[in-house]
Image (cartoon, rainbow, N blue to C red; front, side, top):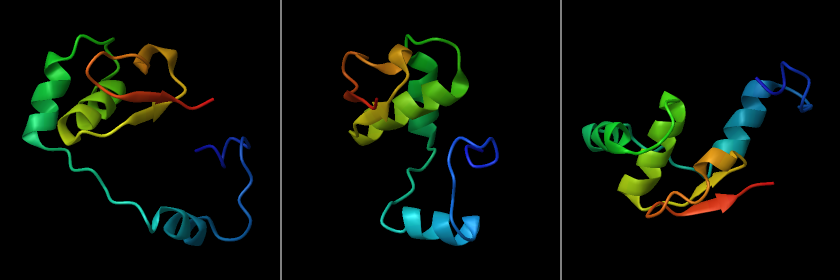
Length: 82
């Protein structure tokens, strides 16, 4: 989406770039525990933000974000990406 909106420029084929950029990452599963946790979080109503925060909490990950509403979530580790 960022490339389509002109906010970033990708040289070459977008699909190849994406495959190379994400090759060293693993996907976090959307499990029943993550869904339950997302429902229980005291957080604003954006479902994508809830799933991101819940995934970080359940899997013990640090949530890196520039969204001020997601920083300092108590027992969920967060890191500002500015």
